[in-house]
Amino acid sequence: MPRSYVREARRGLGRRRERIGPIIDRLAAEHADATIALRFRSDLELLVSVMLSAQTTDVNVNRVTERLFREFRRPEDYLAVPQEELERRIYATGYFRQKARSIQGTARVLLEEFDGEVPTRLDDLVRLPGVGRKTANVVAAELGHAQGIVVDTHVRRLSQRLGFTRREEPEKIERDLIRLVPRADWARFPHLLIWHGRRVCDARWPRCEDCVIAELCPSSRV
Ligand code: SF4
Image 1 (cartoon, rainbow, N blue to C red):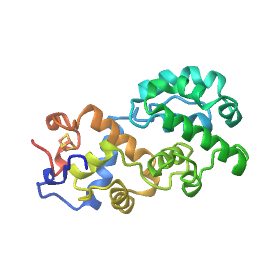
Image 2: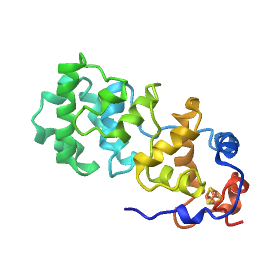
Image 3: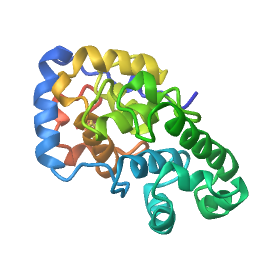
Image 4: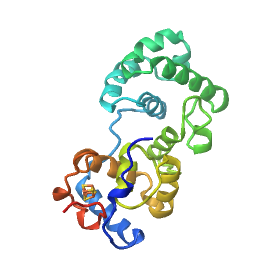
């Protein structure tokens, strides 16, 4: 289990429901450019990019997919090469064997069950090989059909520091956030926390003195 930030939320502040709106507004103003950092031009490219992004950086994925997507455009293209060939092309993203197997398995299911299209329902997405709830949530949200809230390491840390959850497991944190965050904000909320986490609310050294939501944060050190 990764480090917990639940205990850092010590200051007594207003209720979560009263703080969530102003927090979203301030973060949206501060990080107006907060969007997904992966580069893609189609639903399939989005899905493959998110699958490749496990355990590596978005910059790394973009470097690999810039070449990959020149030749691999349809699910059929991923099945037209041996697994080893695909492994070679995505090697730099790490876990290349597992990822190649998942991408080819996913391409097969897309062709067999979804007419070669990427589904938008969470229940359909998680049936694709190698696609877990987090990947499914990211893809559904980017396709304009958010049905949950993405919980990655930044979202987990900030949600705990902001006192939005006392849970540790991503699924339980997501459940708390779904109850709290207005549905219209489900897609952009994780981006706001991710960018705020990268730029200001560092895991070790949060820069509370420069934070636009410090007065709304029970973990603020200022
Ligand atoms: S940087 Fe902001 S969000 Fe993070 S702990 Fe400090 S005040 Fe809270």
